[in-house]
Length: 409
Image (cartoon, rainbow, N blue to C red; front, side, top):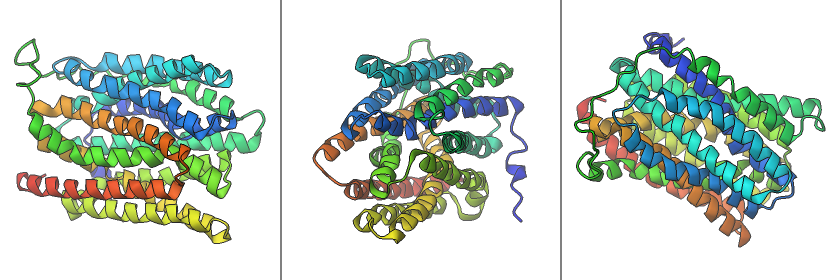
């Protein structure tokens, strides 16, 4: 049996506490990503309306992340985590009330603000880890960071799914999401235990020069594959629940359990990323894992064309269970590759832009999804577009990893 404990044994206790706090933020974030569209569907919102409202959350992320990249350079980061810990669960509860009462302006505002506060935590955590963790523990710490994203899906899905199956009337979509939001406040318990004095790099000057302090040509080349993958993900990931509901007649509880169960595989696979990196190398690991993920996505999408057959839902579920871990497990590697290739002086901005691009892709693609569905483009065709974007991203990751290989990453 492969022993992976040595990849994580050297990580500092405060990093573990911070990642534990992040788990509860991700619990809320994943419920909003995967279950909120199903709740809005149950409240009689159309696919186009759902895409529009969801896009405001992505817009909040997109408009906040890049300014944060400037703001956090040379500054302590813990207060950004605390702000997220307080306001993100609170705003989620308010947004659920607004959805139930069809208060469009309140939905827009709360979804936008949720995106802003989610940015605070997500943009700051990569630089915090890079600054405060030993270099030899970076891959392990980053892997744990991405593991808790999947754990949020696992636990959120299990909680919502089991409660819904236990009593579908009492634990409907709204009440289940409220429970998740309340649990989200537990992040503050762990943030209070992050005691380490932060290692804050000294800025060369108090005034940041937008053009001179960052190597923008290098940054944008580094982030090109992230842009392509994010655009593809935005067309698919938030709407997988709608695909299974409308094409395969799968209920909310079953999909929640399925998505959370597949995330168990993501957790396990991601924990082995440091080992795979040692055995296969950065370049081969990223390339082949993502190619297999694209093949699984195409297989899943194609079931729409023979959905009347009983075997279609079986193939779709199997492909879903393949695609999810394969596509998500490489995130620590692609993030580490991007941070290393862009260089230390660009690290805060690269972290901000990785996050901004991921969610900007969701924003743009949510609007594209709204337009495509309103023009009767089927789910399979939309998912094929995702596959093409993914493959383009894989090509550029392959090129960057080849250039970075000489540095020994």
